[in-house]
Length: 230
Ligand SMILES: [Zn+2]
Image 1 (cartoon, rainbow, N blue to C red):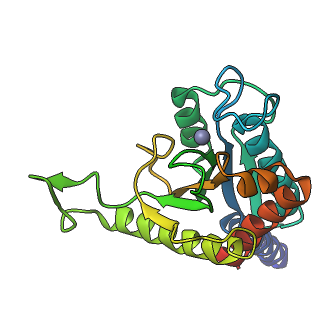
Image 2: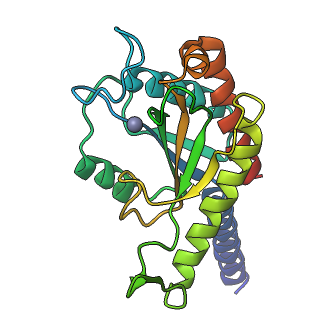
């Protein structure tokens, strides 16, 4: 009898311990956020030309790597780069990476160009309500709660990045914009695109090419991501 009681006690203790461990791992797993950083373009897709030798694809990769380094010390953030070398990433592959990893956030990094040589500053694009149009009107009523939640997260992260990038780039009336960019279309995760400065503006170009500024941009992005998940 006593033997049986001992057995029962031992079994219940084991169940208790395994339940406790399970709860701990569940707790830990729930607190790690996966962020996919997309250094836009790559390989044969050079993006915009910045100098004779340097293209958008080189700068986006440099910033993405710095950003990954900045976030590597964070135990609650896991960073995945869509590419870590000079390779082509097709739209299909990009979508596959997002589907496979189910990230908490997708951030695509670009360099802007155009609108004359005076256009400068950063821009942030977040997916909005534009896709759900009925007869040309925005149909917000039919959006699922999941989608509204996703858009809210994208807006909130964009606002944080805008605030933190402001000290590096003067916005000059640019900044937040609601629009699905091709990289974000069809991704069912919170997403945003950062267009970091204009290659067509000489001041912006100098900043974009400076390793010091690239690091500062990465730090501003990292600071925003960290405070979002704090
Ligand atoms: Zn681009």
